[in-house]
Length: 104
Image (cartoon, rainbow, N blue to C red; front, side, top):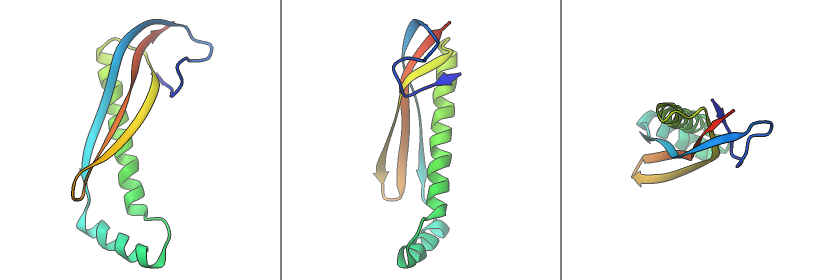
């Protein structure tokens, strides 16, 4: 499945616009990761534990969006966007959405 942030896919023709497609995940922080993050905060630098958690969350949300698009009969997604929000202390949501389309 082709996924792009643009409105069109170079070299491809959109033959049908199916509609909004989305995927999301909500993840909680881990006490162990928080301890490492606190320590990293003191000395500075990237907090690899959180970087990994965020990357995993994005990939899971994309996978869910792709599954939804496939069920709708799409073979591509255009106008991909990400959004994230804090739901409560230590819990964040990653949302990915776009437009499911059929291309030639």
